[in-house]
Image (cartoon, rainbow, N blue to C red; front, side, top):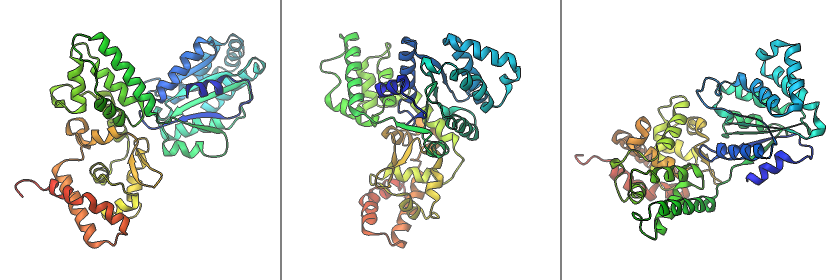
Amino acid sequence: MLADLWKYATTREPRNQVLWLHGPAGAGKSAIMWSLCERLQGAERLGAAFFFKRGHSTRGNARVLFSTIAYRLALRIPSLKGPISRAVENDPSLVSSTPEIQFQQLILGPCQSRADRGPAIIIIDGLDECEGQQMQQEILRILGSYQHHNWIRILIASRPEAHISEITSMGSAYLPFNVKQSFEDVQRYLVDEFARIRQAHARNVPTPWPSHEELETLVHKSSGHFIYASTVIKFVDDPHFRPTTRLAAIVGNRTESEFETPFGALDQLYTQILCAIPKNNKLVNILGIIAYFPARFSPLDIDQLLEFEPGDTVLALHGLSSLVHLDNKNYVWWHHASFGDFLCNPIRAGRFYVGELASRMDLARSVLNALSSLDFGPAVAWRISWNWIKYVIESVPPSA
């Protein structure tokens, strides 16, 4: 993947598209873009990079994006320092102009003057973390509205949120590049990291370690993405604890309550995403259906099960496209298996916990009502009945 991005960024062949690297939360987009920046910088090919960060006073402010990129271009590329400086000297108001004017006058124009020297490579990461959906769309429109040809090369990364995909899918200005799942890469990473930990703790770690079953469990939980795997390694590699004990806390051989939560960073990410969407009282039950039923359902199936109006499930999940998706059969499912674990753990999920007794009882009643009153097709009825008895029994309190 990194090789493909490098080729796109550095080839001298004309490119008039902006490369859009997209993937769900935790897929490793920022890590990929950071690695690309380091490689480009090492080869003295990087023009400028900007990494958005939600809530940051400057890195979360989209209005400083193009002025910051122009400043960094002037620092890194000597042939651009003069044109950019003259543009500001001729019109000092550029530093407070609209993003579109800044892009035209501070970036596009100066870069065009050096077209014969190869493209100025610009990296923008985490667009979905800058302030406001309208501003995110405006940036995409600005970047996609010009024919960059060979004097500028732009790569941008974000989650595939609906309002972002709406712009990037219009016309041919954007070249989509999906961060693919790679279970093999995750397994290779875990094997290498556990070998390093085992070597550092040779006296306290048996051989072989971890077991094949433990490794397979971790690879499965990762859903082929690195955020889970890297969080596991950070937790296990704490020098103040035995690695074997730490790993056991994760795979279930020890209770997690004996330790600080091993997935603090991951939990923060999930909580942040859930807090960002409008409050919807139906969401907990929808997530409960997905979390507790091993069978998968379409949005319409869930609407029927929970006695919602058609379309309510799609609306409730609209802001969760980075965590929840429709698979190739139009069933709702997690992007990451670890998100389901998060929702079912009251300590980790907090107010987003889907396993509270009241919620489970409400959900059980809805399922029973739906089964008795709705005319499901055979396939849907089979998926529902497969596990509904177990779910209802587990939802009834012992005193009932």
